[in-house]
Length: 298
Image 1: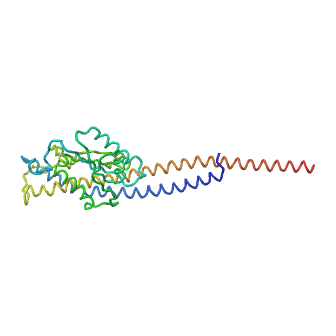
Image 2: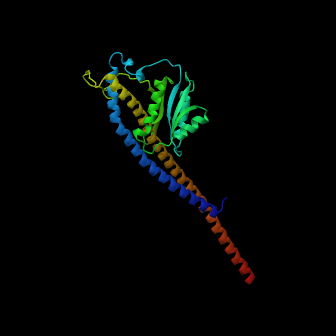
């Protein structure tokens, strides 16, 4: 068993760890609130852009309006925009993302290429010997739309040049502080399903289904809306992943703090036992010494 001095050092180390984990938990809690606010701030623009797209694709021959709306046979490659974190200490956040992604594209019909956002995901993909065509690590803590617009442009250019046939978005969707759901969905070509669901903002269009006139023209408007909406979806996915990462780190640090408190309690009991044993031994030595002096004096 360790000595009382060694246990005091361990208790002091655990106290220092508790201070660090509680500080990280507080920082992550503040960051996740800001990230959620950023996601909510982009939602109205995304809804309006989606409604414009739906109005346009309701018209006959919408497949010819823009190449990003046109489906083609799978013959080349598939691009996956994979979003992860740049830092650790977030529990199984990055591991779950890479495991779900590799499992989803395990037996894919065409070769799969990856556009990695986040150094953790990039390193894990390269460790599994996957083809990473681009790397966007070290994004700002609160990225703006301009910071990520190049990612959407790269994906669109590869699709329009027919280097790839499909673009998928793999990210962790923020649901709540304690729940984050990993999601994989197709980004390109657009798949717009016209459903009659008045409770869904993304499928609700004008109630009268009126025909709108677009200026300067349908194709010009569609060119701006489709390309910007593609980049906006990537931007929203990045913000949602950041919120999920901060939430996962907050929960992980809270669990680490609770475990440290539990370990500290166990060590405190052991320390009290060792200290009590030491006091008992000292008292026995004193009693034994007093008896020896009494015998000598007698």
